[in-house]
Structures are given as C-alpha cells and as structure tokens.
Length: 529
Image 1 (cartoon, rainbow, N blue to C red):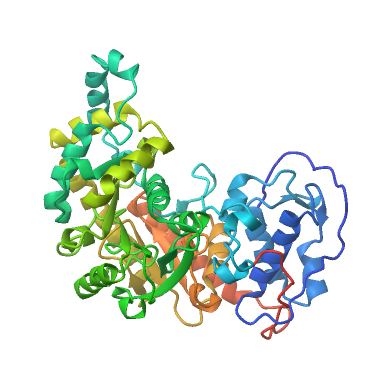
Image 2 (image 1 turned 120 degrees about the horizontal axis):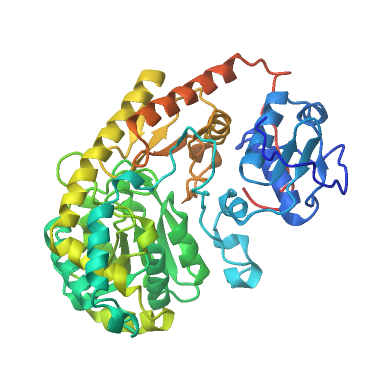
C-alpha cells in the first residue's frame, strides 16, 4: 500500500476493530466502490474522526468475507483522495484534517431534483456542490493524464514577457484607475475579429464580455437567465462545473443522452424558457462532435421553445482531422446562442481570461450584471493579450501547439493499441483529451483508476474527471478519460505501459474467495454515489 506520509504516528483517539459496512444489495457498483463510499461517508459524517484507527485490510477482508485485494483497492483510493493515511508498522488512520481537494474529488451526488423535498432549492438543504479538482502539485506520478491542462513548456514566455514589459512602460495611470467591467475594448475588438475566420462567428465587440474563464461565464449567464425552477437541459454526461452552477441558481436539470453524434436532439424535453448547456465541438467528457444536422435542429428547438443555448467552446482551437464545424453561434440567425470562449486551454488557466458573446438583446443587461459581480479582469493581462493577438503571435502559437498536441494524441492512441490491442476511442479528432471505452472483461473505471494510481499513473473515470453522468452506474464505469496535452510522448508511452502491467498483475492475483454480485441497502451510505 502506498505510503501517504512519512511523519510520526498520529494520535489515535479511537480504535475500530470492525466498521459497520453493508455489502448486501450491490448490483450496480463494485465492492471496492461500496467500501470506499461508506468509509468516506462515515468520515464526512463525523462517525470516524481525524486520528481514528481503521482495521487492517486483512481484518476488513475477513470481516466482509471478500478478497484482500478488494479491501486494498478501497483503501488505496481513500488514501489517494486524502481521507486516510497509513503509517508503516503502525497502522491506518483517518487523516487529521480532510483537505478541500479530497471533498472536491469525491464521487458526486446525482443532481436529480427528486433528491430534495418538492420546491426546495439546493441552498435549502446543503451548500452548493462544486466540481472535481485534482491537486496539480501532487507528487509521485510518472504520468498524469489529467484533463484540460496545457503543456507548460509550450507557453510563449518570451513573447508574453515582452508584451508585458511594453505595456508597463506607460501603465502607471491605467493601473491606478478602474476599468470597464465588461472588459478592455481593444481585447473585445480583437476577439471579435478572431472569431470570424476561426469559428464562423460574426459579432460586434459590444456583444462580448470579458470574464475570468468559463466558470466565471457560467455564473454570469446563470445570473442573467436562471430563476428558481427554471429548466436547464444538460448533456449526459456533462461537465460538473456547468451543471453545478446551474443547479446552485435553482435550475431543474433535464439530462439528455449523448451518443457518437453528440446530444440526442430527438430526446429534448418539451419545456419552454429553458437554458441548454452544450459542448458541441468536443463534448465533455466523451469528446464527440455534434453533427451539423443536430446543430441546426438544436437551434430550431431553442427558437421554437423560447430558450437559450450556452455553447461552451472550451478547446475548439485544436482540430486534428479536417476543418472544425462552424460554431453554433455562427449558425444562429435567431439570436438564441450564447457563446463562451476561453484562453485557459490555448494559453493557460493561470491568466484567468475568457469571454462570453451574448445575443444583442441580452448584451446590455449582461454588462450590468457583470458590474455587480466584479469590477473587471486585470488590465495588464488583457492588454498583453491584445498585443499578442494583433502581432500575429497568438496565431503562430496556436499552429505550433496544435502540431505538438496532434503528435501527443497520436502517441497516446499508438500506446493504447500497442498494449491493449483494438480499442474503442471517442473524441480523438479534436481537443486535449480522449475517452477510452473499456473492453468487455476489464474491471470498472474506478478500479482501473485505483490500479493506475498504485503504479504511479493518473487516469480518470467520469466522476473523478469532473463529469456528471445521469445514467446507470455500470455504464459510467465503462469509460476512462485521458488528457495528453501536458505529457511528452515518452511519458505517455511509459504511463500506458505501467497501466497495462498493473492490469495484467491484477489478473494474476487470486481472489480469497468467489465474489458473487452483492446488494447494498439504500441507506447504507450517507452520501449518494
């Protein structure tokens, strides 16, 4: 078992020779998932507190009459997410202080409105949920396939530094004044010019609001359009960060399944005045592209149902096969699409720069609400981005990293084919990540994730990959999502090779006894899985 901390033993306040874990009734989740969820619930619910000692994996396997390997995998995941710690030759303990990142990476609850009392909002029963965050500074991983992380070595530091220095030469008066909350006009002008040839979007600078990335944009749009009980159509699976923001404003989520052609528009609900959140260019997390026919059908549906579409175009700068389809906004003659773009993927999330393009009839009110949210983004970063785009540096940067990311995508696919044979891949035509549908006979995604972590590799199932899935648990457990942009081709090959070895070693470990499908009672865990 991995060593979580090399400091001395924590004080043991209480010893738990046995834990009240029930495995009866489980049919849609693996045993290690059920063990993980129930121990996590005891920790977050206060039944287990920091410093409490836990039974050994041998004791736990004997208590539950399962293989020891199953208990080890459950403990490995609890250690990885920060809930427990192990001390060599001492024991295993509940972590003294549960870090925020552990709560953020816990498997999310299903956001169905039925989980709350009729008419109750999310704020009536609990704090708003937040999307999964993985600590970017965690050590010990040979290869971390976390999603959406640009290559740090490819940041155009020399050019960016020069633009910063040039702007600072005459910036004293500007830096001591407030600026327009909707964003620097120069930046809105160059963005409008960029969107024409890049995404087929014709827009006036007055329709653009500069925000601190897409998460900031979700909050602005929700403040503008979402009221208590408002219908919000989301993809299933979809990005947690968007779904949770909509939910926090009181929206009632209506998940619509995604297939290989994107959102299944034939299953759109019969609701009016809705907000529809989609990622059509590179669906998150599956990576599929919404077909042209469905794009047109979705826009027609929004017009006929007096609804608005939020188009999250988060990584459309990276198209590897053919030309990207025109953005929904470029096809929107009824002014029903709100377009979101970001520099977090093309440059880096540390800049906190993104933008929202509103229909003309909403632009003025959106600007007023942005003023309520904050007094605008930092002037210096906006000004440097203006110069970077005007001088052609941004275009050259995109062409360069597009070539790099294409090579890394190819390396990942080649490594998966080398070690696993024929593979079912989604989303490889664009973007910074792809989804791998696990072959029949493979363990569920959560177990693959835990096995990979023990081997020093970070791969992610849907829940830990910041995705909400509204279907059956067994279906969501068939996908692994892997980001490739921030890894070298050598790291990619090494990571996949280690994953393959870990899965092969798992097959060679005999179980202590056969494990038939078990069931778990509905109230066995304080947190829905």
